[in-house]
Length: 253
Ligand SMILES: NC(=O)c1ccc[n+]([C@@H]2O[C@H](COP(=O)([O-])OP(=O)(O)OC[C@H]3O[C@@H](n4cnc5c(N)ncnc54)[C@H](O)[C@@H]3O)[C@@H](O)[C@H]2O)c1
Image (tube, rainbow, N blue to C red):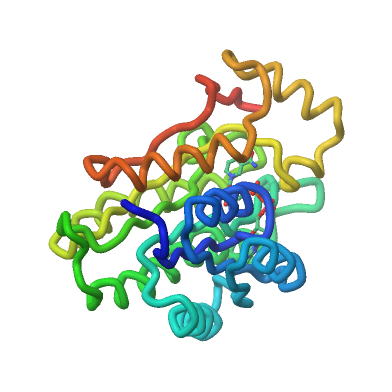
C-alpha cells in the first residue's frame, strides 16, 4: 500500500515498538496519529513527526472513540491501525502474599486484549464505509501479541492469557473483515529493547539476550517496525500471527 498521505493510527505510539512504528510510518509519508495515555510523550513525538497526538486510554470505549474521531477529523479515515499499547505486569497466580488480586489479572486483560479489540472495532467500523483502494483493499490492522502467547513463563498467566487472546482473535477478525478488504495480522515479538524491557536490571537483560538462539541479542524496535511495513506492503498476508523472535522458545522460568 502506498503510504504517502495515508492516515495511520498507532496505539502505545509514544514509546518502544509503537514509537518506532510511528517513526517508520511518518518517514514513509503517512499522516500518523499517536494514541497513548502518556500525553506529553505522545505530543512530543507527534510534533517531531508532523503528526497528531490523541490522548487515549485503550480500555475505555469513550476515550478510544473520541481519539479515533479526532484523528479522523484531522487526517481523514485511518487505513492503518497498529495496536502497540500494552503492559507486561508480572505476577504468579499464588504469590508470597496469597492469591493474585483478581483486579490485577483483569487490568492486564483490559489493556492488552480488550484495548486491542476496542480500537479494532472502532477503526474497522469507519474503514468499512471508506472507498476501496485500487486493489480492492481498504486497510490493514496489525496487533501486537508476544511469544508469551505460546510459551508463557511462570509469573505470566495474565500476560500470556491477554496475548493468547490477541493471537486467537486474529483469524476470526480477518475472516469477518475479508469482504471489506481489511486485513488483520498480529506480530508476536520475542525480546525487544524498549522502555518496557529497560525496567529489568542490565544483567537480566544480558542473560535474556544470550538466551536468543540467533541473533543472540535483544531485538531492535526498528526490526518490529520493518515487519509492520512488510505486512502493510504484502497483501497476501492475512489472518496470521507472526513470531519475530530469533528462534527463541522461552523456558518455564
Ligand atoms: N518489548 C518487548 O520485549 C515485547 C515483547 C513482546 C511483546 N511486547 C508487546 O509490545 C507492545 C509494546 O511494548 P513496548 O515494549 O514498546 O512497551 P512500552 O512500555 O515502551 O510502550 C507501551 C506504550 O503503551 C502505552 N499504554 C499503556 N497502557 C495504555 C492504555 N491503557 N492506553 C493507551 N496506551 C497505553 C504506554 O504509555 C506506552 O507508551 C506491548 O503490547 C507489549 O506487551 C513487547
